[in-house]
Amino acid sequence: KAGVTQTPRYLIKTRGQQVTLSCSPISGHRSVSWYQQTPGQGLQFLFEYFSETQRNKGNFPGRFSGRQFSNSRSEMNVSTLELGDSALYLCASSFRETGADTGELFFGEGSRLTVL
Amino acid sequence: GQSLEQPSEVTAVEGAIVQINCTYQTSGFYGLSWYQQHDGGAPTFLSYNALDGLEETGRFSSFLSRSDSYGYLLLQELQMKDSASYFCAVKGSQGNLIFGKGTKLSVKP
Image 1 (tube, chains in turn orange, yellow):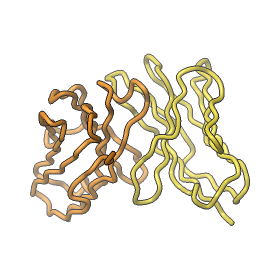
Image 2 (tube, helix red, strand yellow):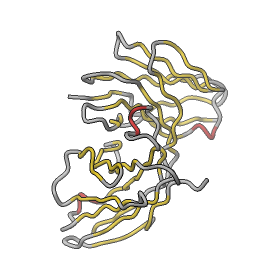
Image 3 (cartoon, chains in turn purple, yellow):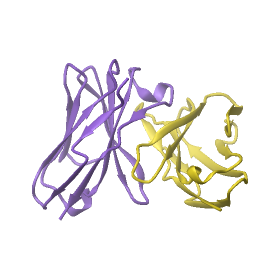
Image 4 (cartoon, helix red, strand yellow):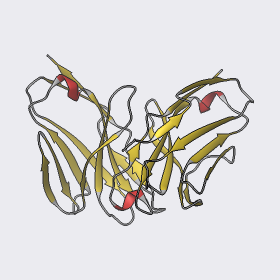
């Protein structure tokens, strides 16, 4: 069974631009979560989707948005990029309605965004 | 609010035993998870404790004390490949997993 796939793996943008990241969950998984990881800050929760509905949202500005499609694939978008948005963006999937119910999420290898 | 505290770095030698502690504060507790992440890699699930006590999976064990809001990950017979960051996590009030900032384990020969 293929794992969680994230694209692109690496990208470089400049301030003010926008970026879209894609995540394909494990086949059969309907819950997708997004996290931002920066050195020293651990994993910060962005949002979680289940069956195309956003179930939870973290404390990030409105420049961060996401969506989930009927095939469970998910995208996140960051508009008006700032230097501080440079980070590893991780996507995780779960077959349960919320991955936190069993504490087990399956992570992709992430999309590393550098903002110049 | 919710928060988790774990040491930022731990160093140990090959073959030794190391314990990584995690204390948490959360409204409504469901369980404590542990994840491993190698540099440049994806976090991978190690264990989940919903009840008090010790859970053993090979060289790794995880312990939970709900009354103390405390848990730990125990790694035995350390190998070089165990060098990685380890994160504890709990379910937050909104239903998502909240992670600690991670403990970087360095295993020396």
